[in-house]
Image 1 (tube, rainbow, N blue to C red):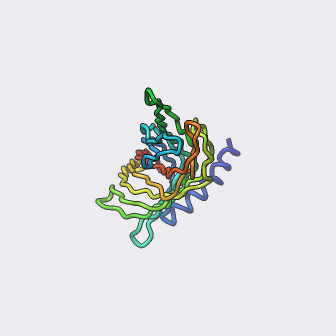
Image 2: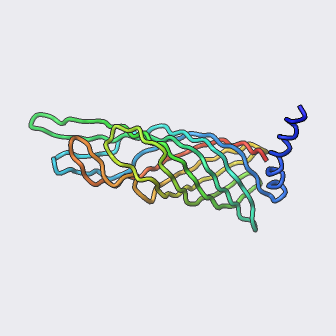
Image 3: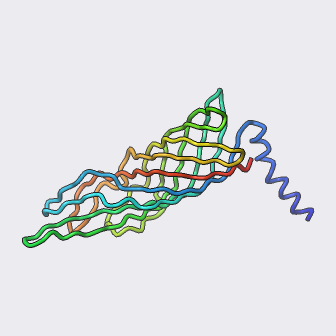
Length: 204
């Protein structure tokens, strides 16, 4: 029991130091809907690549939050799993054939958010998010870029140690420069967008 108390005190020292400096942190978990956004693209073989349905996304990780000169700083890091669909339409003499391909991408996201608080419980923030690709389980034949840069905008509510956030995320860069569908490879501007809702719990 004594050893457990000693270990707990050692682990609690950084959290206590952060609290004295006005820095808080904790865990977050949430979900949303994601979609690969691009313009309808025609291939040389007479087919067309069009966006499919949005898919459910999940994320979980941690955050830090500090207030400096009245400005809220909130860096986060979390693992996220996102998905979407790609539809390839090819036409022969008799009929249009449709192939549905699924995107399933795992990432590590690091948003750096800046904002301000209102009415003691409301937060408004936004900032860049850097995403590193951590895995790809997709039926679309493509090579994903190792990292992308995007933008997050949203609002949050804090009730004691509990927090609720709602955000929109758009992308400045492609997840891949081309893809292969229906036997054809062609350039395609593919950017992820998603709407997210998360719950957070402040540990210190």
